[in-house]
Image (tube, rainbow, N blue to C red):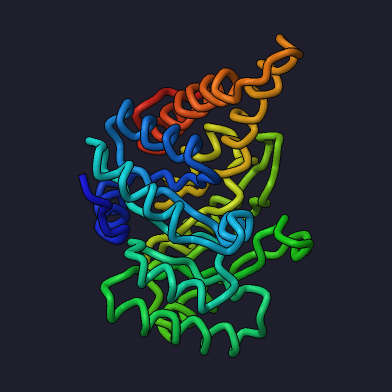
Length: 284
């Protein structure tokens, strides 16, 4: 079925007190894995293309976005397409023009007033096309060395930021860090609850790869709606490729290692979707 707008998926999840998975893809195989996960789990999924992914594809966002749209068209799953971590406001406008269901403008490294002004301009452009905008307030670690230990999003400032910019969702700093390969992060769930009570838009958790299943479940129960995952799933994909090549050093056909990697990523993605949506028992 056609790609859906992102906003209604988040609104429905928030109303039901569950989370929505938002998983990053980097190529056609990972896109197929994620679509397959949404189909097998029967749960909605936000497919994410990051600015870094666009750079990897030589600055061309259109071919991958159109491939994802075609996968969705041929799928039975409920899928949305989101531009993740765009620090370039022009890239957000390009994504809106390509039909993305939502975009994230990441101005967290900017001075507060500049972040507000640039984010507001992105919102105005996207809103004219009916596209949701996510923004970030408070540094979330692991992106280009931006992390400072202990940084957290202030609930009062978050409320003001949403009011001043008109954003539709807010990524918050509550203890997670990007690019974690070990799932041992302990989140500040009290702060998540305070932010939920202060901010009138869905909250987004970035850096979720470092959070164990039980931590993801508790974050959703505390008020997180959109759960972004990238590194953990890339690790499953790459680990399978490494295993396949290690088993047969003479292997040269990419299909023989990319295919199993795609299947492994699909299985883990489906499992995570069920965890986030409260449909799978997790360890304490």
